Length: 55
Image (tube, rainbow, N blue to C red; front, side, top):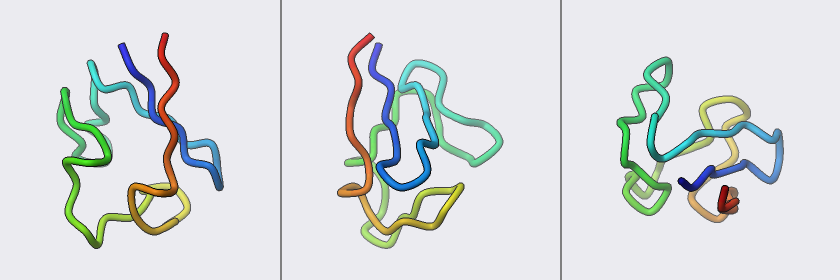
């Protein structure tokens, strides 16, 4: 399981669960998101705003 964490607001989503509240499907990673994707909590731009935490 991998959890991605926003470096700006610490929003987290689990790749196994996704985040239905923000329409992030299970299995998705930041690399799967469109180029203009932003953090759903703080609007930080792009995949560079996220780091992976292995659990």
